[in-house]
Amino acid sequence: MRIEKDINKDLLAMKKKEEISEALFTRLRSTGVQLARMYGLAKVHKQGTPLRPVLSLPGSSYDNLNKTLAMYLDEIEGANIETNTQMAREILEKTELDSDESIISSDVKSLYTNFPLKEAVEIALRRLYEQVNPPETSRKTMKKLLNLSVSKVHFKCNDLWYVQKDGLAMGASLAVKLANLWLEEYEPALKKEVPQLFELKEVNKELCPRCQKKVTYRTKGVECEICSNWYHLGCGNISESEYADIPETVCS
Picture 1 (cartoon, rainbow, N blue to C red):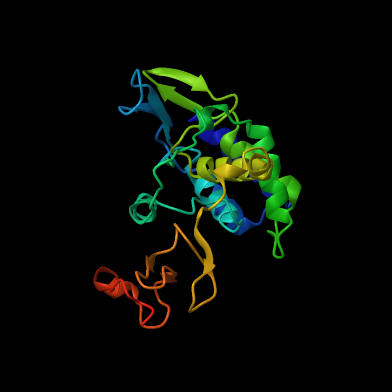
Picture 2: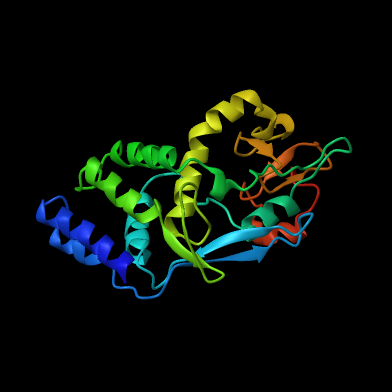
């Protein structure tokens, strides 16, 4: 397969120039014979039922590159999703809103297919090499590897061949990590422009009488019916396992 030969040729050239080690060459070397293919998952919760593009790479010529380079980016804080559906649900179940409050979800439309790939790679490189223990591979070589893995990817869809020019599709190991790092770069600007989206609402202005920390809607807590103060779970004799049976008079 020509794609596999081209990838291995580039990797071999790097090894001969001692840009990558023999061990890394072996890990990155393409051994896949399955074609990368793109398919769509229907977003049934959205108007018009648009398709979410998913790029299937397992067994393809790009698979080893994606998996290995993703392990490097794993070391960068913020490269991985820091929550999951279960965690979000637990937080929302314990969130109490006033009558004039609402919960909103902010999303980026078609994020993966629209974010600038070159910019995302540069951000990932900067974050990767500003760490205390950066990779032994040089930054220049790592850039070559990242571009080889995610730039100009050949894939098949409906029996036709396509070449990706920019952006990424879900399904690639590097896609989520690059997207997270790119978004995190702009988070300070978003916080400044729309601070209310990032602020935690306080239950009251007083501190928990036992730990002297503020009680927020993201923290499991209970309000005492005698003193009207909010207490954190885990403070004193209040434990998470006893949450369902906590008396409302917790200050006594």
